[in-house]
Amino acid sequence: MLLYYVVEATQGWGSIAELVFDGRLLSMLAALAFAGLLIEAFRLTIVCRGEETRLPVSQSIRLVLLGTFFNYIVPGGTGGDAAKLYYLTVGNRGKGVEMATVLVADRTIAFVSLLLMILVLAAVNAPVVASTVLLRWVVSIVFLAVVAISTLTWLLLRSHALPQTLPRVVAGVFRNRWVRRAVGAVHRIGSRRVVLWGAVAVSLCGHSMVALMFLVSGAAVFGAPPTAIVPLLGFVALLANAVPITPGGIGVGEGAFEVLFRLVGFSGGSRLIILWRVATLPLAVVGGILYATGYGRIALADNASLQSESHGT
Image 1 (tube, rainbow, N blue to C red):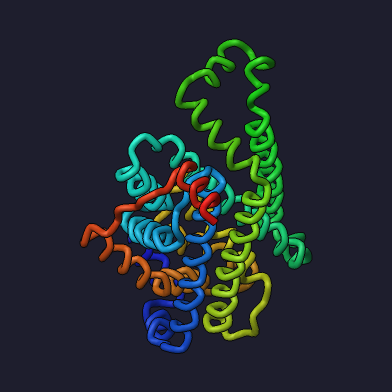
Image 2 (image 1 turned 90 degrees about the vertical axis):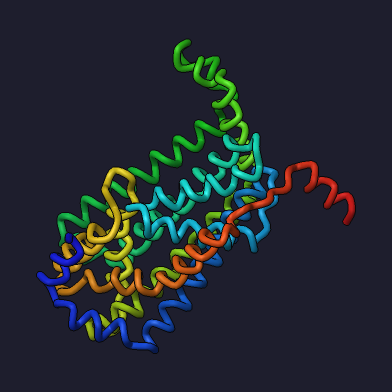
């Protein structure tokens, strides 16, 4: 209902249909969406490697496809994360805590990379940001969020010393068996700085694919040359669909896109995310087929397997 209202109140369904049936445009967007999926899968493989677990890229692609399908079924991004956790643990008993930590680390890296992209694009579009009150507030909050997440990560990486310095009640949490396993996984990932920064670099490449999608679709929607303000507003609007405190889902993102783009004089911003949804829909369909046919089982190799591989080579 929200999606219907947003579209009817802006450009109507006719203008959207004209874009959706533009084969050349959709082919370009679908190719960029597929490239983004490959990058996301590669990042997850890298993070798993940091936790001393081998997740082949082929299985990581399957996992991301399943997550894409469930993101369409469940509002926001939580459905896809829950599906990934289920398929990572259902065939690998005893590694639930570690796999949950890997997914949290993967999501955190993706989220921080998104925030960094927003800051970079905000610097490129400094005059527009300075003249728009809402954007100034958003960019300030994004900057504070990056600082807060970086500080929390630094504390977690030093958490072996925290129980001696924290109050007794808080320190007791770190003695919990499940918490210690999660903290251990964080340490293993964080101690491999090459892996950690490699995952960040890969994530930034993935967000660059999304930025290109916004540039291509923005040129088609607004009939103007691509401009850096389009991906900036697009990434800011995606936060409304990704942050767990918002309901997410179809309609919420469209409303956020429409409001933000109207702030800088663009009408019909909701069509950008609709094009993005249409371009990623084939990936969700493939994920749905994998789910329906039962091809979701993921096999992991532990640290012993990794060591035997390295000795064999």
